[in-house]
Length: 263
Image 1 (spheres, rainbow, N blue to C red):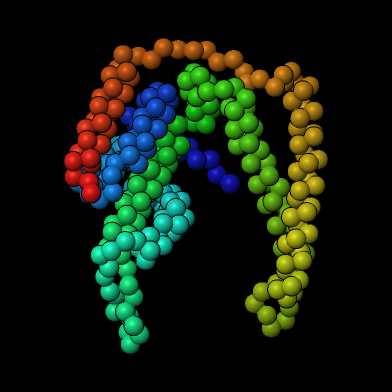
Image 2 (cartoon, rainbow, N blue to C red; image 1 turned 45 degrees about the vertical axis):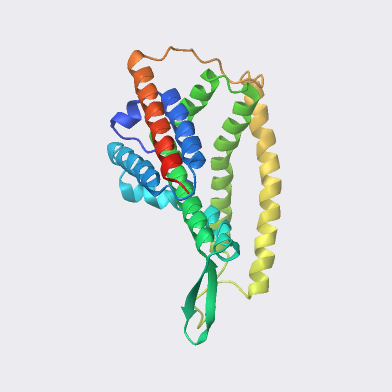
């Protein structure tokens, strides 16, 4: 398992984490409030995010690859194409009867797909240009409840612990699974593989509980009280406030453009 943050020297990396958090949330909100079919506004939203991706020096292929996380949301909206209201269209399919689709439903599906894709691009850009501790500090300074931040922080850190445990178990399984003569794969039948996988899942659950007890005992011995470490609050610089204000104003203008051009 790899960190989401990608170190680099760019203007986007140097922006205050609070500014990036607020701007990203505002970007996602205004994008999703834009009416369906507002194609000029969608193009400008995408162009803006595309430009930020280039400015961050992450590489557009890197951002696009990670933004594939939006695919499940897109597939969930696919039934709109076939269940939407009239007018209806026909898609010829070889020698079979034509497939009926809704023109309005297709536009709604396309709008949802673009919104989901660009929103995930914004989230990916935030995570890739901001260290996770800086994100937690930013949320803390933005008055997000401390308990919520503690849960997120512990969950994220121990995902790597569980990932390492899974990797060791997979290596152990591979070392104990010889390849049969005349076969290109190790192990037994599909039923055997399912049984082994179920046993590994149960073993991982037990190991996770034991590991969490040891980790928690180590945390208590080092003075953990259940509260996140106090962070020094710093004021935003004037240039950060101006950049944030300019970004929000542009978002409002793009949203108004979407309201005018949307269906």
